[in-house]
Length: 197
Image (cartoon, rainbow, N blue to C red; front, side):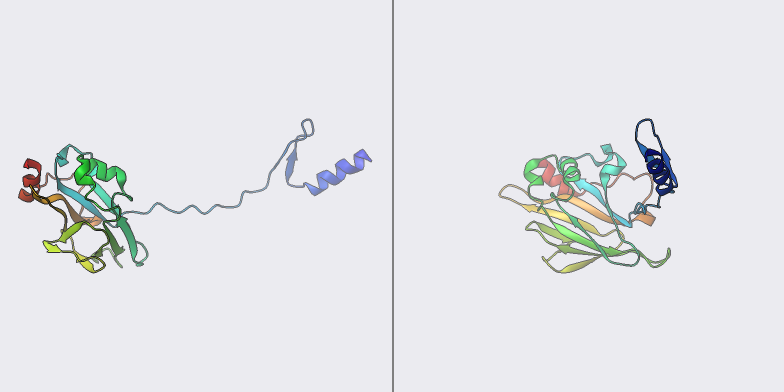
């Protein structure tokens, strides 16, 4: 009976390797392919240009840029704020008081990958938080989309009893135009005034 069981087992397990001494066996079947998503490449970045109390050029390149993604011509929205990029905002704004002026979700950036390499990246910023924002010098209204173009600047502004101005300035940069070595940005007088206050 034992011999018949062993023969039946070996017939049922065709394609398997059986270790009869331990009772363990492993399947010698070809493994089915596992779909692995290819890493996404950033379509654009938000680069820190200036911030209160920060030497931007002392930062490593990956600490200066917040990647924005898009793919397949489909609009992809990236939320930006203390809740979503806590490590970056801690680096950009060492002063916790100013950092707390940034909403958990300050804004969202929606963009789509360009249809071709010659097409420009289109982006839209929609303010979502309580903090005041300006895009290219114009106030961003909560819930209303503002177009982002290459070089557009996003400013976080602060108004207090003894100081006011821009405490964090970001620049929208398509990935295709981002150099491998980031050049030193010119200091913003508004940011400098907050630092000095």
